[in-house]
Length: 84
Image 1 (cartoon, rainbow, N blue to C red):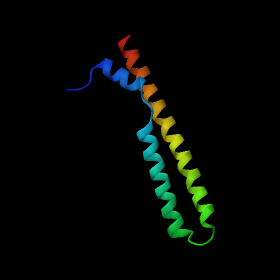
Image 2 (image 1 turned 90 degrees about the vertical axis):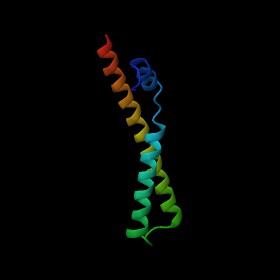
Image 3 (image 1 turned 45 degrees about the vertical axis):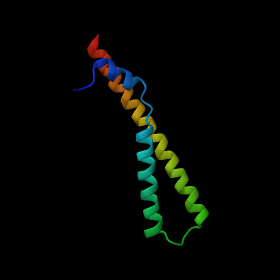
Image 4 (image 1 turned 90 degrees about the horizontal axis):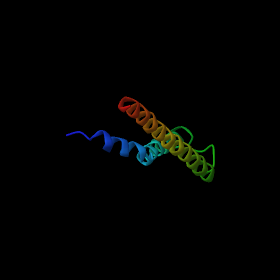
């Protein structure tokens, strides 16, 4: 059985984007690590690569979190518009 409209509203109101943030960060860091290992093996120092990887992961996490929150707000607005 699916969730009721009230349950869906409660879920959308409390959306935080943590899962999406983690997935975006993991994908970005994984892609950067693959790039750094395969295509850029010696052109920069290890510290530089770690800092760039950290920055890419942080940026991806922020984008993933914002996208998930905005999507939940859009769905909530649409759902509440249907109920009125």
